Image 1 (cartoon, helix red, strand yellow):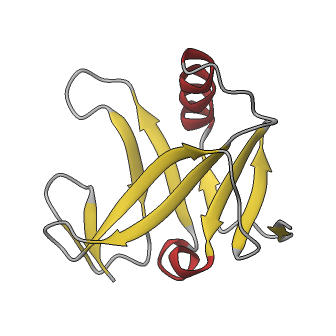
Image 2 (cartoon, helix red, strand yellow; image 1 turned 45 degrees about the horizontal axis):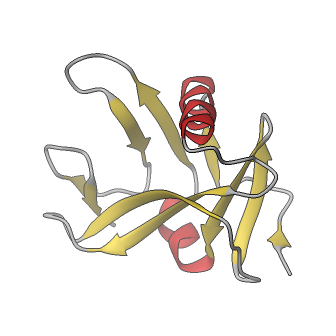
Image 3 (cartoon, helix red, strand yellow; image 1 turned 30 degrees about the horizontal axis):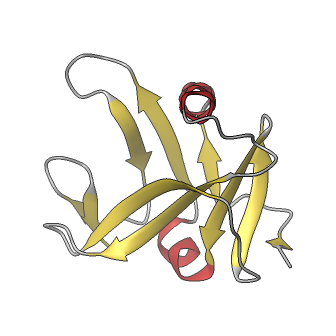
Length: 117
C-alpha cells in the first residue's frame, strides 16, 4: 500500500523532469511501473549524501507524489532532511547533472553531493 500525501516533500524542476523522462526511456522503464526514488543515506564527506535511483517497489512508509507524469518516492526518514528541497538538473559540460538545493543543509561539501543537517 502506498502512502501518498497532498504536499510534495520536494520540488522537481522542469529540467529535472525532462532528464528523468529521458533516463526512464533509455532504461525502458514506464512511469506506470517505476518511481524516481529520492533519498538520503549516511556517508559522504559532510555526513549525509543524496541518493537517486529508479525503483519498481514502494513502501507504506514512502511519500509518493507525481510531477508531470513522473512518480517520485521519498522514504519517511529522508523526508526529514529533504523537506523543501528542489531537485534540479544542469546540462552544462562543467558542473552538469542533478543538483539538490536543500534549505535544511547547514553545510555542503564542494561537490554538492553530501551535506550536514
